[in-house]
Image 1 (cartoon, helix red, strand yellow):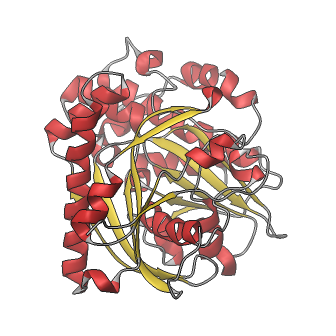
Image 2: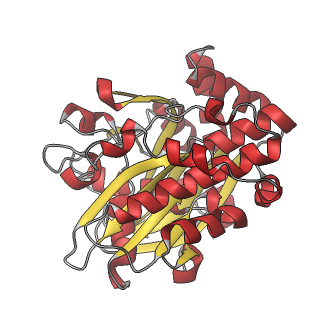
Length: 362
């Protein structure tokens, strides 16, 4: 793609992750290279009904077109809310990076599905929208994820290396950055998804708020040890996961608290394993995503990795908005024809760009 936009420019990134709890909208000014200026963000929660519909669609049930339209309307509301807070007109914003909602991710089949109505969003907001970030990577031999590492690298340019950023959404993924500028990235195991599903089944809650259930539980170390024998952990490091790759059945038969404790330990153990699998042990782990709000998970990560661990706010990043910011950054890279992924991040054969531009039709 080529673009007449003058950079750096104001862009909005939109992200709804595998937890399917709502939409993050972030405003940044960037050139898609080294100029990264995060500004502000907002979150619009999915209704319980829409979240149920999205989770059902992830299991192959429901009307994908209707769900896509409903969630795109929430994304539009997030854009409008953010622009109102920033006192911006649509002419002030160069691009929207619209990730969409992942409903199925099967890298072993070369298939990934993110739903959303990008043309409708462009028409509704009057702002060009970049969508479908993952397909081109998969066409060139990549796994389509994770895509955030290049943004992590731009943000982390001044940090002591090696350092590892851990994003704990529904799935957990890591970005390791070395002294020589090298980047390694991968989905590293379950994040919050199994814990959320467990809590939903046993209490009706969306998550284990503040890790209170896990705090009361006893971890079954035999289950954690067995989990780390999963074939996933002997694959090539460039890999990715579907939200439902791992099953909550591994803790069936436990009481609610012990199941929550064991699932939390499983997430932490996978992160610790991933840190040890990197070319050099990171000096610190910087945690982003919803998992960093769970103090029991944070404690377990520090214990099971034996590496200093802190939320990304320690280095003045906006943890609640980091992935949304990244898709604004990637939207700029897309229209500039710059790579979105590397062989060391997704397993793609060579660095490739991606994304499809949707201009407003009116």
